[in-house]
Length: 448
Ligand code: MLT
Image (cartoon, rainbow, N blue to C red):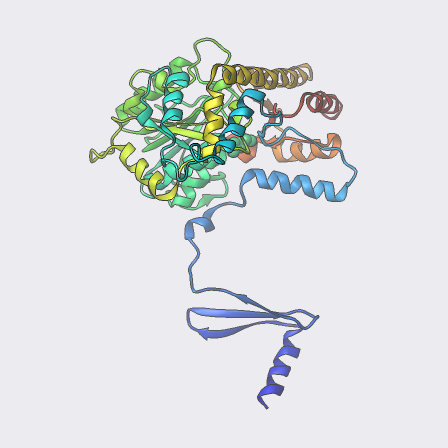
């Protein structure tokens, strides 16, 4: 009897999906497919983090990849060129590569072997970062070496917790907003505005040169500024950064300065670090990365500078809490990769970085000229690897799709960086030269 009831249940379930209540809080759903294999799909008794339910869709770059792959599935012979995600394409140059190889080889020797690193990074690399990239403006003890700026932004958010208000440039690199939502700093997405309630969006547009009026924006505890900017490609001037530091100090805000694109700065008197601005050590943290310096997007190496004197309102040093996050959730960047980082900062490595950056900046110049010749307003591309093109009122997602279909070129719709990016398209200069030239030929036809 018991057996035949079980057979009946299985037969019924071949067409149906049903739920077996096990207790009030925990239900199990059983599905059976037509091949008579029974699949159990269990839901647990664990409530979903309500902050994740607030997130509007997936992260931007996988979504771009999904659309690209969908196009490829429909058009298997398509020859797609990516000017989308800012991912480097040129091989790691020889002196830097040697650092990585030597770092790996050392692990095979008794003397060169090392295990868990210091969570803050190797002392010699922290010293070199302070000396070569900051000219001694910051102390090695203020440098935390990591696996990248993006991961550090999440760790910084862990440190701040849910009770702070964050302010972002609009448009901005999506990580600042998405991690703020994940941490519970926001309410729901306001669908009409495309903005989360609880975040201060600082408008960046053509009229203000894509730099926000921080003083005119409501006060926030944490202010995210990226310069040279992703996605607009515009680098903040010294005067703009001085004003921002002044406002943050007056308001008791912490400025999180993302300088990941600093090596692309070629204009004179544009600061490469927020610590070039007087008073910044009293209010700023800087995140940075070797990703775009040296083609380390896959290798993974970055750093964050937290000044010794920076304090929370109760007097606790911010560095103390950031150190607590790092020592708890990170075991130090790979020792091999840190050897590569040291090679980056040698005179030969710095020269190679300069050559790499020049190559990408020439690409950016080719992209700029193409769109200027087509009659578009173009921003960025002189101190940054991104150009930001005004679409004269056209929808950025529609233009993204149109370009993908007509030219088989992947771009990034400005709206993916926040509502302030609507009406713009971001193009990355990280493709190989021949790809950039070919893409420009196709874009001339598609966008004329
Ligand atoms: C971008 O395309 O915006 C960046 O490369 C993504 C990143 O750095 O995480």
